[in-house]
Length: 487
Ligand SMILES: *Cc1c(COP(=O)(O)O)cnc(C)c1O
Image (tube, rainbow, N blue to C red; front, side, top):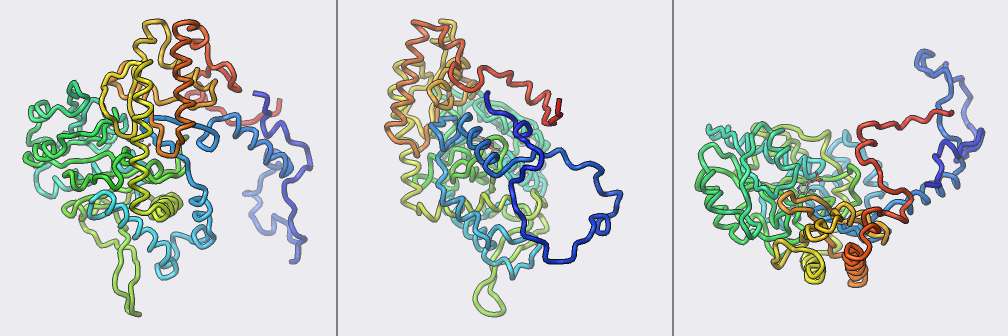
């Protein structure tokens, strides 16, 4: 890492700004701010020029990998390219200079955007009402489970268990527990799908819901979903869809039509927005009519205006609501980006997104299965999961393969997830990649599989050309130190 810290670039007196001359009488700071609130010494901030700052961060941005720089097939995360028009429009002054405490009549445009985004999501998913409040997928899961809890309680049938398959994303059991339920795990069948016989065995009056991802985390579509829905509903339970994989379904089929009662969306995955590293995201929740009374407040609604025409307003009158899940109304900026994305593509474009995501994944799958084990060899949706078991026998772990890929300027796939595949490599190319970039990835994966046979040391000691080698992945989290001290 040759790049210095911004503090090391600091030079006393250097400035990155110039302010206009004061055109009002000058006053001393301590006439304006109580002296006990004033700091004694100037803050330890770097003193740098604008060009120092710009170059410093541009240099950093190319040392790291990101979607604007290269292929990013991180399975389950849908790291698609984010059209720049989203950013341009999300930055419009009319959208960024409003405050959530303004009166409704002064933010009609923002409320309309939220209302319409909700309608689009309803249309795409086949659900009947939407809350845009949750901040990300996992937060949408928690919201949905609290809604499910409130529903059973209202029906005087409190239930304590939520069934999840063994292929579930880690946030699923975590959300189940956080919402106060306990988990009941069921094993997937030999095809990697829900085993209906297993499901029937564990189904009883104490089950609140079945929580599944469709297509599931192996990238496989649950073909028996209508039968699954019947089994769940016959027992008085609800069917919940983790919608993180919606990128495979848009315009082709809808969770609402498959029998799901509640679904969360990951706007930052399916509908583009730079994400990773903790946000920002948005995880709206869509429900069928019977669950609508429990949605979080406030609810963005529309009514006839006294002045004629229509007006948008924030509805707080939902006595059965689970309450607020986010300060104000959610992550508005991410909603704007999703809105722009949907409006720009339209219905036909969204279907093409899903079709191309599926074609790209199957293209990679067909070729790579000749070099890596493919435990569930089926036509896949937008992603698929290889196993590094064959390479492991030769002493090369999946982690080594992931690290070696970085030398080719490619981001690694998701590794060691889902848990039901040994040495898993979960690959999601997304629709935004051309055949050329898919071929580059294929070439690198083939080259690595040959190295495993001929020169395994090359793989086990990777990466070789990145700014840093193998990092202690736990240290930054366990021993976080962001303070700068001049030595
Ligand atoms: C990403 C993901 C989640 C969690 O969503 P976040 O937005 O990261 O909180 C849940 N389930 C699946 C299948 C996912 O891929």
